Length: 276
Ligand SMILES: Cc1cc2nc3c(=O)[nH]c(=O)nc-3n(C[C@H](O)[C@H](O)[C@H](O)COP(=O)(O)OP(=O)(O)OC[C@H]3O[C@@H](n4cnc5c(N)ncnc54)[C@H](O)[C@@H]3O)c2cc1C
Ligand code: FES
Image (cartoon, rainbow, N blue to C red):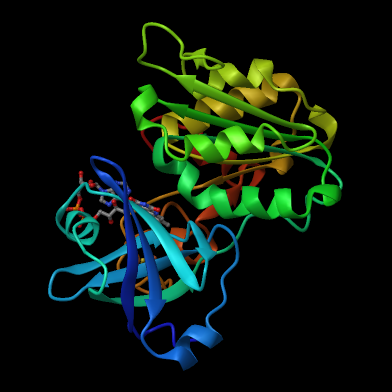
């Protein structure tokens, strides 16, 4: 366990430009002792500190080849600075924070992953884990929505997942005039009708824009999926990430401490209110 208050120095080992404004950074702690003590669970996030500019919460996309991977969209000062870093650059990194996807509780059940845009990043590690432990789950359904085909991240990986036994991969583009081959036209929610799963035995994990998650929750309820079995990940501005400053508070829960992953039945009342 690393000290949750301390940003430890981490080096950019690799940088992949995924799209014009999305970059994946592979990071390794400068201190091998910190590196060896670091552990995370699928769905958690780190605070990345760009020295002199500020700190932002970014989901842990995965851990591969001894590096933590973070996929970042340039939207403002800090995220833009992070996406411009080159291999060899240093940042501060503290974490991991937050809770994780319910992969243990979902053993023996169908798993549905519903994501849109960069909402896929916090879910990738969970999908990879489910596939690595394929026999522990029943059907897998992976749904991802983007606006345009060129916004799609990791197309080759999604294509490989189509080859996994009993794994349905459904992609949707909402702003294309013609659907690319093997895609659907429309929002990711339109894919729920095409998904093959048992509503009584399905656990759902989703992440994306909040209107998309509200629409997905309603569509899943119509299919008979209980709110107790649906989970989603929320994003809010954060500062401490430790449940102390109140920046991320949403009703009673603090997103950093009680989330970012919530069970729909626990928060349905306020989350389904538009504009909450
Ligand atoms: C738990 C968690 C996980 C996250 N994971 C990722 C990730 O994997 N990849 C990624 O690119 N981003 C992720 N984010 C969002 C990321 O933290 C924000 O984009 C970042 O804080 C923006 O900071 P900035 O200084 O670059 O922009 P700012 O100048 O602070 O803001 C620029 C614009 O982005 C909006 N914005 C700021 N923070 C957020 C936020 N948290 N959510 C939505 N909009 C925001 C602002 O309203 C403003 O319009 C995550 C956020 C949280 C809370
Ligand atoms: S970020 Fe400070 S309480 Fe959540």
